[in-house]
Image (cartoon, rainbow, N blue to C red; front, side, top):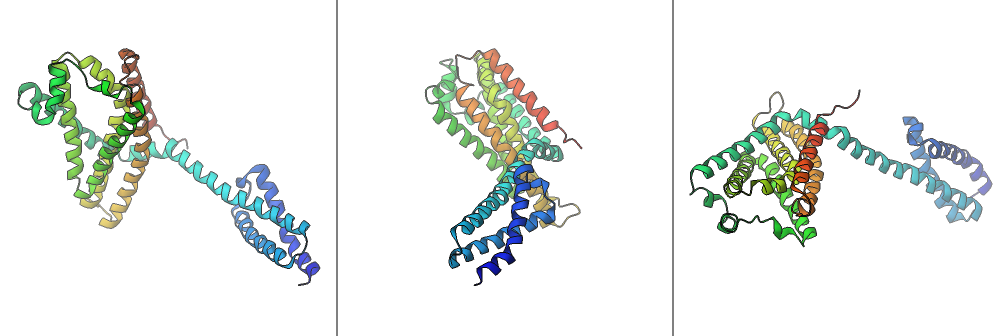
Length: 318
């Protein structure tokens, strides 16, 4: 290989790549046009091949180091820039995308919420009027603890907060994913999960109310429940979306409707997971903590719920 002739032929590409990299390093990848970005990637591959050839033919350490520097800089800008863009997409989704999906799927979320509330009202009604109903829903040990010893069960979390918090997160995620996966059963299992959890809440509310423990119980529920319950409603909405794609495809073919609704359901899942993680931390470390006043817990739960509603209601600026 004639080294001088090869360098003379290839050097314009090296200089061009260096100039593009200088612009990107000073002003970012957005400073390049689409064609320039494609050209940058092409030059990177070309210079990488030149580096391999230079090493094979031992053209000199100075040139090899120069080409190695060019390839390293190119790699960092192309791949690190790509990662930065992906990170920005994640941030944009949680900032604007998730609220938009919640607003677009509000009908299914409202139905899921109604099913849960209906279950709660039925659980409350039958527990209040029929003493035989409560033992069908709640464990006898729990009833005895509250009714006979006038104790709530949250104290078992104290002292094992990290383990309890992890267990709570896993349990909440399982409940939510069951509600979502229930969509493939034409929504029947989703309805069952929502209704059953509503009945449980309604029945427990009667148990603590009849034994004068409602105030500390709801003080425990408010901080984490302000995020946990809406997350379950969102999960139920995602399950109903999948069911709607199967049962009511509308103007689309059933497969296309399922893909469209499934995409929205998946986006809801992405938003649900952080809510449940935060709720699990609160339920493990704040909700059962006797050192935190109950009034503060009520205010915290109310504040978190208001912030969540405002977040889900926001519109992306045009």
